[in-house]
Length: 120
Image (cartoon, rainbow, N blue to C red):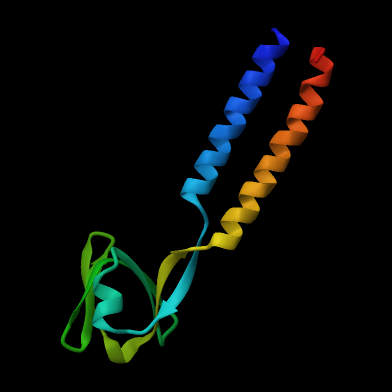
């Protein structure tokens, strides 16, 4: 295999990994107030009950004094009096940047160890 081919493949794989990493990103769960505006504009929320049970609810909405949505294939209705906390996923920019930098460093180290033995 030619040196140019090794360099090209290394750079292509590296750029692809960085692209995927920065676009998929890392997320963190953030607590939000239990309000209609915070709940209904999300596709997915995490609900922690006072009892300690946790539910991942999709397509949530408020109906009176209850939180309603899908838990798996079932429709679930949780009284707000039983809810301890509601969380949503938000992008975590610090983790995403850190992981992208680590990935780029790995690619550079890989490139430096592969390219010199190939005669470049």
